Image (cartoon, rainbow, N blue to C red; front, side, top):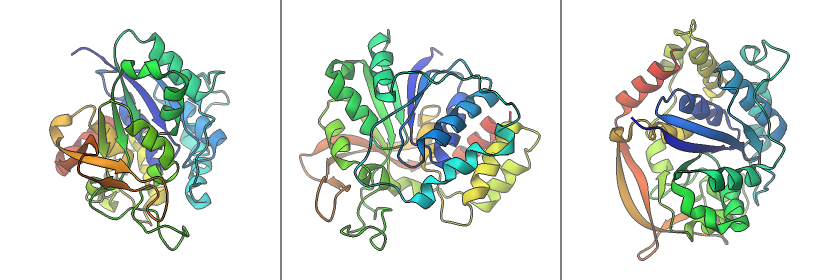
Length: 307
């Protein structure tokens, strides 16, 4: 199987690190780099944790870049502080030095350079807001020709969003956080002709992180990667937590686990529905992951992290 070129763009939530770990286990993927968008995190610990994870997985040759973009609606501090917790996990701090390089240029400039230099089309694996992608496209519109597709965890089509009305004044509850952080940038990406494959809340709501699956990861504790995954999920098990980013990323390895459905959509950028991904006749066509074989997915991630 020929290797697929992939550039990862994550935003530092707990499941973003785990999606990165999963991507590292895919033999048919050539990862060109990891961009950290400072959305569901604090930038410094998120970048640090990402580099330490690449060290742990013996992938220190893969560069990491810190995006300097900013969103419109900040993620709650309670969500963002998890980046500090993950960065301090003992399994990630067995060495006093980090070997994985942090590039000097910003994440958006790094994305432009990587895409410009790519000899084949690149898949963007995005598990956070689309702001870094939109900024890169504004800087160098020609890079759109180098993007094979965007696989993105984001949006809610026929279900409620996860931006709570009680916490966000002036919101009607229809928005998903990765869109709501910066709906204008999402709408900018919607203006392109790039193929978009979404993993929306419609699907992730059906694939929860359960105690059973976390216990199974823990029982693989002689495998450091599975141990780390279990530790990370243990941090969030008291709340409703789903395989958002990991489910989206697993698509790159096993698209046959999923059924896609095409929708015509629009990103709402203002008003009470700011951040909503709305189905509208004649809207921008996107593919959404509609169903997944859950048992095969659960088995796959356990198998991949057993190392």
